[in-house]
Length: 321
Length: 260
Ligand SMILES: Cc1cc2nc3c(=O)[nH]c(=O)nc-3n(C[C@H](O)[C@H](O)[C@H](O)COP(=O)(O)OP(=O)(O)OC[C@H]3O[C@@H](n4cnc5c(N)ncnc54)[C@H](O)[C@@H]3O)c2cc1C
Ligand SMILES: Nc1ncnc2c1ncn2[C@@H]1O[C@H](COP(=O)(O)O)[C@@H](O)[C@H]1O
Image 1: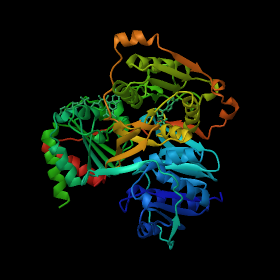
Image 2 (image 1 turned 90 degrees about the horizontal axis):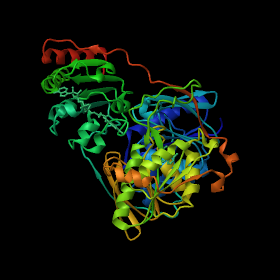
Image 3 (image 1 turned 180 degrees about the vertical axis):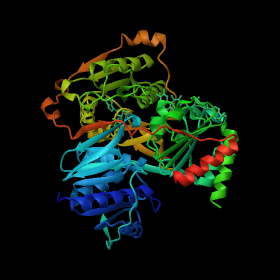
Image 4 (image 1 turned 120 degrees about the vertical axis):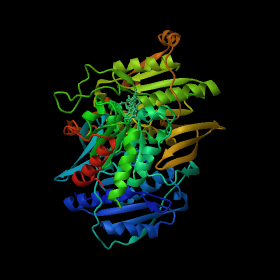
């Protein structure tokens, strides 16, 4: 494969998302195998200096597409700008992080350039110059190996599934101008939930279900705090109004792949399992020894969650000193 | 306000999905089929818009003949009419192709707004809505949790990573749904009776002026399906008291699983 790989680096307010480094590391691994060039591209306003942070992951080139219209993410402005860069640079493979923004942008760009897109891949392997991507379907009930055909192929990679590897490099940021054209959408504002750890990127997720019995989640929040974990919920807890929709894990919520998933008072419905079964280690805490989640958990703890959670927090505090 | 809903029929989320003999498709015989949950939100939102602004709600599906059941359910919820595009060559169609067919069909239906699901919970492609909007040359706003229409513009609150954004676009536009947008109504008994008499058009590719020949080479191919790796049987964490179990769990996680 002579055409290169382009990684779309995602930044928001001058900070790269963690998945960017995962995708860039994955891009480097694939580029080395295929013996092709690796280009990282970042879009935004005033991001040339930020772009330099990508150097450590070994891209051959770093392109910064700067324009005041790219200050905040807007689907049409970003699609126009990125499609222009693709036209100019002619990459064969495009890699995105499967964040909310990455999914939105990759879908629209794929349609614009009439190229196939494999979303939310958990692994990509190369056989000669054919890439096979593994992606969960049916909410994780099956894994599909897919092959894309055509001049250009787009993949997005699920957060927390590729390892970040520093490769070193000497690429310097090249600023390229964007051809943004007409933008009909308008960004009004955004409200970030400060101090909250993102569920999809967290290394540890602590979730509470209907067993929480109400909106007081303090026992799992205290545990999450000592672990630096994100707090998730089952749909039952969301439907009860105890937690916000953005906290829901499952087939109709967020799909998470943390190193450790701890489920408190969650029975293990198939729709919930779909959203967390790709976690590396699963711990279930439930006072019903027959709870179906125990069949899917690596470690089963039969206990009242309100009784045990504070002890778990305490024990972890002991080891983390 | 004419609203077009893109609706896909999918296996219900309770379904156990099994791989068929060919290794690249699934066994469909015993499955229960439903409206994609995110498309239910789309139908509900469309009905609310009609209640507020008048107009029509049309349901558009690409799928097998069987998918007519899902359209009927949406009609029973209150939608006005349905269009089902069905063609044997579309079997195994990838999201990009599906989007092209939907866009071609949408061109024949008047609309001010299209509502799609953020994803179909079968292929989880997160793509068709955006690709339809692109093919029609209209803006797309994904993962919408609240929308407001005034003077030919739509303003939406949408989920972004780590928060909520507010964005605006001129109509016609396409939005995709996110949980929290609304709670879909159930089809009432009178609704079900009325739905039987509502128009449901069936179309082939030829009816849409599309050449079936161009739908033979899909650009995304499934080469294998596998069940996710089985988790090895859970280890029960022992202890007489909750405190002992907590201590043992933390020891295991720290020393054996090494997750912290
Ligand atoms: C279309 C559709 C989509 C869905 N999507 C999702 C989804 O994305 N995510 C999702 O989670 N669900 C989803 N569901 C819902 C799913 O089917 C279950 O209803 C839901 O997951 C149950 O949540 P739960 O386990 O918290 O509650 P329950 O099933 O009620 O389980 C509560 C558990 O808590 C235990 N418990 C109670 N008290 C205590 C205590 N003091 N200490 C310890 N344990 C205790 C009980 O033994 C029980 O096992 C969906 C359903 C449908 C129909
Ligand atoms: N075959 C189809 N017919 C009608 N709408 C569809 C079809 N496939 C996908 N869609 C729409 O596109 C959304 C996203 O689907 P997907 O990109 O497949 O995850 C769905 O929620 C539907 O609104």
